[in-house]
Length: 511
Ligand SMILES: [Cu+2]
Image 1 (cartoon, protein in one colour):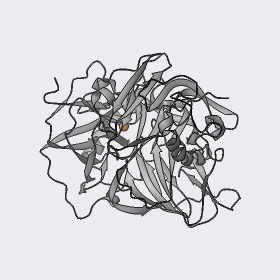
Image 2 (image 1 turned 60 degrees about the vertical axis):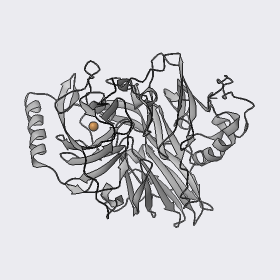
Image 3 (image 1 turned 120 degrees about the vertical axis):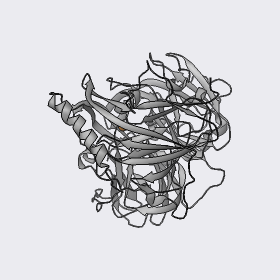
Image 4 (image 1 turned 135 degrees about the vertical axis):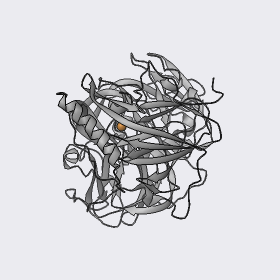
């Protein structure tokens, strides 16, 4: 029996159970292991390990090595939050302060990053910004006001480097839902899905999907630059740099067919909150015979909700989408990559009264375009300043690992001087140019940004905190400098961020 702790005090315990029911139904972990059915109410501020939480904590998270059962009798040993995968769903209320106690039962100092939230550098969970570590075998209590509303998440911000048991390669990922003050309410219930691979290994050259993004406008100059650099390094006898592959694929910690299905009724509308919790992979998701009405990207409502046959999510991206259950049967909701789906990347959707072998049929080819959800009648305001960034790859330059540079600077813990200086209140545009053939899920900490130009086409109204930039393409994002303090900007692909793909902003007056 796994020992798990949910760490929710009595006052909001019932609420957690209510909302947690949705994920349990979707097969996060069975109620047996969570002990939820047996003990619906906790007697006091203790988590289920019997350890007392201090007075003020609304939630307790415990970082520790544990076993998770991804299929019957198939156990993964990894670092988790509270002994489960994903970590417990933390439900916050927009604008209502919350206190979280984070215990670190490992030998490694930890950073817990509140991804997608507008918090201070002291809370954010990035050593580069100066957030204090949660000491090994120690703890840290953080109090902050959750914002903005919507689907966020928490994850470790430790570096993995060449160590594929560290960083986000393990099980340190959990969803956060910040309830908006006013609910849209056009659905019957919510289901949270966290997509995650386990047992990573290195290979030379990968098979990442490259051709699903739209619009496509490869920039000749970037392509020539990237290809000549690659040719030069291969010509010197260098192999391709390392990529990461995985043995097991899961949704909510269970391989396809081995968890509880998502149980639905004909006619109901289910709001899926999908989180790509992968360290390195881009994921897709389709449900045969159904479409997804995308209502939010990275937790932020989109100006133009729109139906799509497939969801695509770069590392750390989130999509909230409503599915109308109008096609009774038993279906596989899964990744388009046959290999990954066969190794677990999917979950069964089962209509009430139907029992049969789950059916998978691939959707028609479909390209993912953020602008589909944009506001067609709005033009983004002009920025006060534009920051130019070019991303380059140095093939296999460090012990077989690719190094990554922003404007020719490879970020390293030894050289962390902020490269860009912000003035509070100004609107900045980052003009990003990708001189590599990889897709990069680009992330800005502590701020939301607006996509303002996609492959040469102006767009407006889509606000995110991670965006995929296609190979040899250009992309503009705008943000308002409204949260002073050091601010990290990086590719969220763990292998890229760990090997240089990072930079820091600071604000005038920070020092
Ligand atoms: Cu990248």
